[in-house]
Amino acid sequence: MIRYAVLLVLLMASPAVAAGAPDARDSVKIQDCVKVSGQDTAKADVCVGQVADPCLARSATRSTADQNACIDREYKVWDDILNETFRLLRDKLDEAQKAKLREMQRAWIASRDASCGFYGDFYQGTMASPMAAYCNTRETARRALFLLGFLNNAESR
Image (cartoon, rainbow, N blue to C red; front, side, top):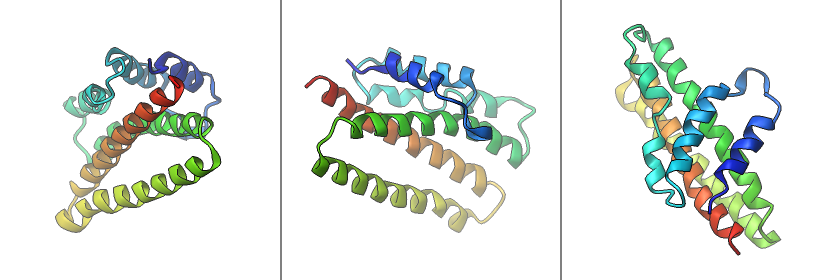
């Protein structure tokens, strides 16, 4: 079974990193959603948007800055989950696997950044910024869930 509860405790217990730390309520909301999906990380894809979407739906969220702030709240949670999952997975691997994991992750970062950055190249307007931010959040969440699948398998060995 994926150790979502352990991951949640580790995330909540870690010291807040300046203004980059996610809101604890946002973390709990997403972690609870991921826990409900159980071992099926593919089903956990429904957890993407749990924080950003309700925030974006508020009538007061009109400006690009407000939209980006909503999306950033969720991004911080998924980024924390991704980094902690990466660390936990890395600690379970041998040296060759660690090198491959690091290589794979660097390639994914380049792909995510290029793909999400294309919104700015294509739309070139005000909406490109929140669209790129949401893409970055969505892809970070998917990557976190992808790595959680490996972590689950590594913990069951």
